[in-house]
Length: 68
Image 1 (tube, one colour):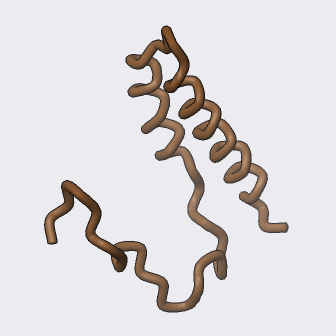
Image 2 (image 1 turned 135 degrees about the horizontal axis):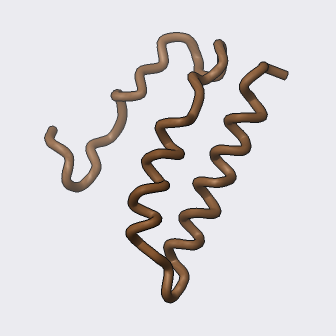
């Protein structure tokens, strides 16, 4: 297993739990707004070969609210 895989799994799990918390009645959304981006930024670089060769994360469908 790659050296950062445990960190990636742990951080993604925390982001998921934060998303569930944000949907709860009475959730502190200020907390969610501060912690969510901080967790996302803390994700380590993905290990080599995690994505197929030539993968472009910016290549995909246009989503509502995005410029074409």
